Amino acid sequence: MAIRTIDVALPDRLPEERTWRSALWWFVRRNPLGAVGGLLMVLLIGSAIFAEVLATHNPVRTSARVLVPPGAEYWLGTDNLGRDLWSRVVHGSRISLVVGLASTLLGAGLGGVVGLVSGYLGGKTDLVVQRLMDIMQALPILVLALVMAAALWPSLMNTVIAISVVIAPRAARLIRSSVLAIREFVYIESARALGVSHGRVAFRHILPNTFGPFIVLVTAQLGGAILAEAALSFLGLGIPEPYPSWGRMLSIAAAEYAQKAPWLVIFPGVAISLAVFGTNLLGDALRDTLDPRLRGS
Image (tube, rainbow, N blue to C red; front, side, top):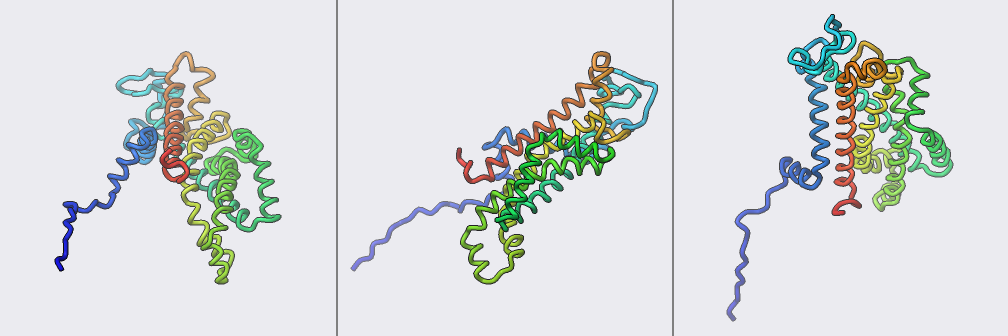
C-alpha cells in the first residue's frame, strides 16, 4: 500500500527570542506617553548623576552678579545672591531624586512588610494593623508630612523619614490586597501541608509574587515624594540651605522676586513639573503593562 506524504512548508527561520531592544520598542508603541515619561526620568537621572559635569558654576558660591537675566554666561540667570540658577537646578535634581527614591523605597519597603504580615496572619492582627493604616490614610498627605517634618529638625535624613511615613500606609494596603489573594493559591496550601514554616511561606513563596505591584507602587509614588519634598522645602521644613533644592528656590523667589526676576520661579517650577509628570506617566504605563487585568484594554 502506497504511503501518502504531506508536504509541510516550514518557515525559513524560527522566530527570534525577544531582545531588550524589541521589548523596548514594543513598550514605546504600546505606551507612547509612558515612553515620554521614561525619557523624562532618564533625563532626571542623567542630570543627577552628571550634575558636576553639567553645572557651569559652583551652585552654592555667591557673587556680585545678582539677578542677572538668562544669557550666554548664566544660562538660566542668577538669583538674589548671585548664584548660577542653571547649576542650582541641575544639582537640585540630585537632591530631589535622592530624597524621592530613598523615601519611596523606605516607605514602600516598611509598608510592604506590614502589609505582608497583616494579610498573611489575618484575624485580630490584621484588624488592628489596618485600622491604624486607616487612621494614617485619613490625614491628607501634605498635612501628615508637615506634622512629621515639624516634629524633626530640617535635614536630608529627616525629610526622607517624614515622606516615607506618608507612603507606608498606601504600600501596606496594596501589598495586603495581593497577599490575601496569593495565600489562597494551591501551591501555598501545599507548602503548608508539607510543614513549611510560616515565615518561609510568607517571605519565600508569597513575597516574590508581590514584586509586580510593588514596582508599580514605587514608580507611582516617586512623583508624589518629589512633590512632597518640594513642598516641605518651600515651607522651610525640608532641605536646609545651602543645599540647592527646587522647593527652596521657589520659596526664596516667590515672595519678593517673582515680578522682578521671573526666571527664579519659572525654571525650578518647570523642573518640578517635568519630574512629577514623567514619574506619573511612567507609573501609569508600568501599571497597564504589569497588571494582567489591564492588558489589552
